[in-house]
Each structure stands twice: as structure tokens, then as C-alpha cells.
Length: 123
Length: 106
Image (cartoon, rainbow over all chains, first blue to last red):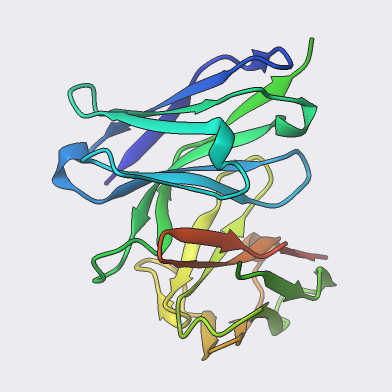
């Protein structure tokens, strides 16, 4: 069973860079497949941020692409998110997740999720 | 970009009721549609993928149907643990979009 856990600062100042890490256990991140970041502003819906393959190939939400970097460290079984130039609008619960294709080569859904981490953007 | 809409935005129901939630895509998405359940303070849980395939361990009272642009999630007999917010989600060609959610409460 895949287990994911987000970690990082819970408070980031406006204009700075938000950095989070997702630690994966119970599954070799090298075994393949895709990993993702998803966020949810307080009281609002879910927004996909981006997806990374274990080889390092990345795919980003076009609306966030200019500010997002996702990377993977297979030696540590972790993948990370950086979101630059944050504003109050970036305050959200951030989830990392495993992206699954259910028999398809490419990912279509998110079947395992971390518990989430709340990041507040405030001075 | 493909947009997802859901209706209703909220529904009040009682234990034992049959509940149906609709999800519509702005263009045809074949059967690339998933449904999630989210309870307060928790991560979403994938219930259904490929429009109608139940994830292992999900109770059979949950079912999904549809293809193209129109999809439904049905809970045949609502249980106390089913009160939650439900999201539809499309993913294909490395782009993923969620619907705005439907809150099922008492």
C-alpha cells in the first residue's frame, strides 16, 4: 500500500517561494508511474498543480506553469513542489498523490493521497 | 481547456435515500471520468474510475455511469458515513480537471 506524507513550512511570506516535499513509502518511487501535487483553498474545490514521472518528466497546470517546479529524488523516495511569487490566493491545503492509469500507460486518476498540509501565505 | 461542472452544488438527504449527482464535461471525454469522496479535514478518496468501475473496497451502493459529456454518480441507499462532498475529475493527455463538488448533507 502506497503511503504519502507532505512536509514543509506552514507559513510563507508573500512574494516568496513555497517549498513542499512528499515522502513516499510502501512503494518504490522508481517502480514507475506518476506522482502529483493538488491543492485546495480553504472551503473551495480541488486544483491539479502538476505531475512528475519517476524519470523526471513533468507536466504542469497551464494556469500555474510559470510559477511551478516539481522535482523528484528517487534516492530519498521523495518528490517536491516549488511555487514561486506566492500571494494570499495561494493559501491552500496541499496534497501529494499517486497518479494511476488502471491499465493504461498514462495516468488519469489519483488513487493514493497524502493527508495534506495547510500552507498560509501571510506577512 | 476542458471544464467540468456538477449539479446540484448541494443536496440534503436522509439515510436510506437514493442520491444522484451529475457531472458534465465541456467537451467529449469518452469515459475518462473519476469520482471522489471527501470528508472534512481529510484527503479525497477515489471511488470510481473510467466512469463506472468501482475501486476495490468501495461499497457496491456506489455506482457510476455515462460517457462523452454526461456522467452520474448514484448512491443507492445513503448511509451515515456517506455524508461528504463528492467531486468528479477528468484526466487525459496529462491535464487534470476537477468539478466544483457536490455536498451531500442531512
